[in-house]
Length: 317
Ligand SMILES: Nc1nc2c(ncn2[C@@H]2O[C@H](COP(=O)(O)OP(=O)(O)OP(=O)(O)O)[C@@H](O)[C@H]2O)c(=O)[nH]1
Ligand SMILES: [Mg+2]
Image (tube, rainbow, N blue to C red; front, side):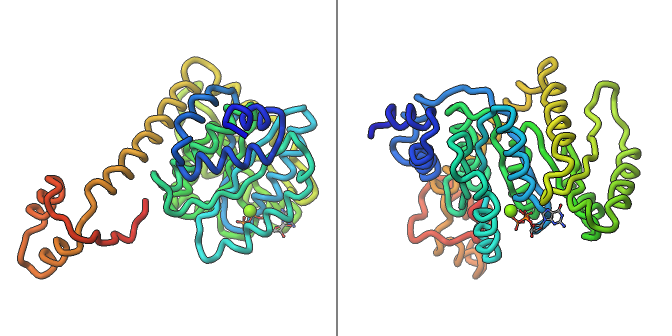
């Protein structure tokens, strides 16, 4: 099947076709630019869901999918696997929990392994989001474990970011420290069936009352859910819709998307520069042994004059 046929099939709900197109995008194959030309535009709400491991992200995603499907919306999900040694079980768990929707052609779910792609985690996932949006999905969910900078970046790619917390995990305080709170548009205290949920909600509200806001600025609501029993989902769906309406006023959404596009371009440029101006091992050795200063070595790299095998930086950024 050629690209146009695959695109048509994917638009009609053929998940195998969608999977093949995502592979083209993720692997950045030679067909990727042609595909980008075929699949443009779209009007999806992009919802980021982040939070500590085990807080209930996938369970909540499954409940949200059901709610949006009931509204007749098509839902795509990218569950980002940071390719850590800890994630194997989580991915399997995601598959199991989201299996409720395995037979629904209006739902597409994919785990994205992002290590080693051009432009890194953010670029790969954004490209996937862009594809799903172009294929006509109404909601695209990105689930990421909320640890580390890369995940914060991903969350910033969403139109609306949900930060999930659970009682008794000390999550509220951790979130403040990590600066995750600033990127969230909606707080969700999940596992509200557990003791301490009220306290977590109170802590969050108290914390937010300290933030000074301009008139008209978004005030993050705090929703409570029991994802495993699909409780509180309607209120959460309403809060997400409200944020979308707020974004739609004036230039907010367009501005957000411009920032996202700029970040996406930036990531690809950075990745390309890393390849083009790789640091040769011999040059690093010369600096380490005091034969050459760092600035001169950098100059050599920028002039492209060093040659020799590249040294790993330990950062695929
Ligand atoms: N009691 C209770 N358990 C829940 C609730 N939501 C999810 N769980 C359970 O919490 C566990 C973790 O849920 P997941 O949805 O896999 O959590 P996650 O945040 O996606 O986990 P990772 O992807 O590994 O970071 C599972 O055993 C769920 O059944 C809830 O509201 N109440
Ligand atoms: Mg999960």
